[in-house]
Image (cartoon, rainbow, N blue to C red; front, side, top):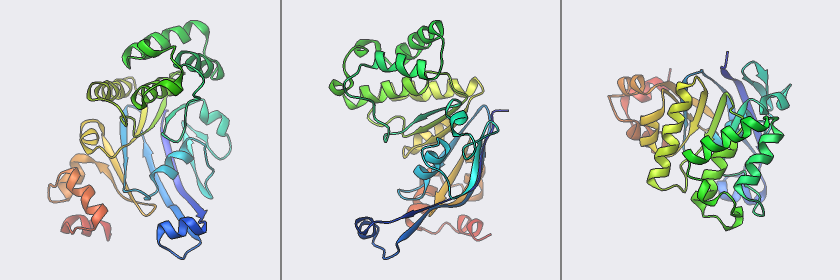
Length: 266
């Protein structure tokens, strides 16, 4: 079963003097995620929300095997990121602004390169290329070097390359960043298509209208801990019927929604 399970995840980082100054703290250690657990299921889009520094990126990087947890584990379709990171990488498509495409190569070349790296057969590579390049409008610049592309074009190419091997698990961090309205809509529509195919999708975004449109359930992380994890409907119902935008503002500013506050104290 294509379930993604985050189990009691904990990760601590040592802060440099510069980082401590930016964080306005004297503490030398920062707990990025602390006993974090949640499950994402096949055929659903799970939204991972939280203010900057809450632990979202650390969680996503751990799922994608870029960093190892100090404690806990993530099971991706039953495969452990701790014990079999190579096996996990073959199952996931990961998109983040932290991973940059090489400037000297074209999207077309990089698509083929990563497809072969994942062991995709030649005929399947062409099928995937035709589908993804058409969906995200890449054909017009597929032979242009990445270094000469706009931010939006780079994002389109990155999305296509992250999906080259038709993964069962998709982890997208701010996928619509730098995209025009029409292209952003093509991305959100494609995520719904992936959901219909039974894929397990984890989406992190600051665009709350996208969350309301796409996400079946959301988890809100604050200071490395999961504060709320439920469907949007239940969160709204339990929190004075406030929209997800107002709920998010509450988490970011501490504004007191009585019912939400009561839930957090349980």
